[in-house]
Length: 383
Image (cartoon, rainbow, N blue to C red; front, side, top):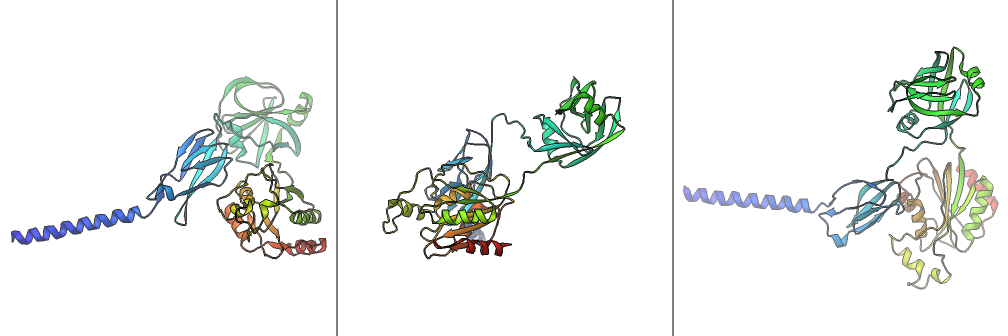
């Protein structure tokens, strides 16, 4: 019996060891990042690692090197903003979100915050504090206000905001937070404990009293959104894409912006028959990101016409740099390309994947002989 027990014990022990070994092997075969989210201040560094992977086989990249760069897993925070750091291993991507803040960050207050009182727009200088930042998140907001004390209009905001009350004496035009949940706008002075929100400018005390000295008023605080616009952004070396871009801008009334490489391309760089030329090397390297010389703002852009030549069947890698460096949320992107024979192919789909934002429409190829009537027909077909 004792021999049987020993045999059974040995078999059971072997089974447990084999089971645990299998678990370890399985666990090791599924790589994972040591963290999927980093919060850094500008100038700080942090180390990422892809656990369960061979370190020398992991390829690291950043979707926006201006915000955070990465080399061998070491992330360096450069500018305030958010981006993604990607570890690529055996065809799979592992993503870590990186948020960079300035040291001693102050709240960001939108310059387009506007106040109207009974439909009259006021010029306001807003404070830069947590209370105004929290108020901004509620916009647009309408506050029904009532006259009080012969010096102010006061009304419920409907929620409590962060407050930093101090004993102050108000002036005509002051806008304050009272008791954390009330908006007060003064047309005369009063001393009490308030949190300053801002002040109306360009109105005399008499004008403010006429506006605010009635039984009640309605105040509306909102964001004055800039006019929506369309923009044509293009990269061109031989002038073909430039010509098409100019016609699109003329037909659509769009702004025209050209992508300029930090290091200009020469004709030798574009020699298709030489595998050692700059463009050939870049196009064969999916991680190549040629630097862009000029800043291209898309503020207020709602429609983006994005143009480029076809190089070796794809968009030039500098276009990868552009789409990864811009947040296209809320933007309709309409790609177009130029080439002697190659179609737009998968180039636009690749850019869409790299951008990871925006609403992308089907693109179109144009040749060097394209005229403005062809452009008009294409634009009409998009509507």
